[in-house]
Image (cartoon, rainbow, N blue to C red; front, side, top):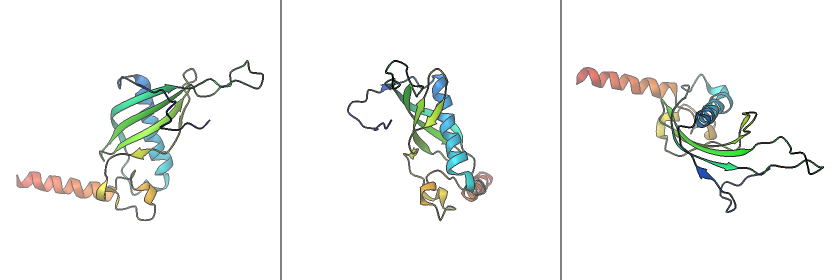
Length: 155
């Protein structure tokens, strides 16, 4: 089943960002960034952690029927869109996930998008443009920490 993000027929509902399922979904998204997107770049990038959930919405998906048209096919029941911020980079990402209410099965549905600027924080990634929005370079982080400790000493 292909779901279009801006389909006029979709009916998403804003959610209370303190719902426990949203934390699980945001953590699944951060895990996907770390263990799928940046898997071969862990030596260059600082591990990201969930900082906060900014916004979330859900859409209930139609239940597909099997060939006999009676038995529901086990599939995802909801589509969630979660906007979240990570530390230490301050990156804000939007993730779309499919979720099955009974089994708690989760799947990242489409590319996770960074919605704020990242500037020079990913300059250590030269060869993979699509990874720059995810990586917060260890070298940049160390440089920033050194600058902060120097400015605290001189203050």
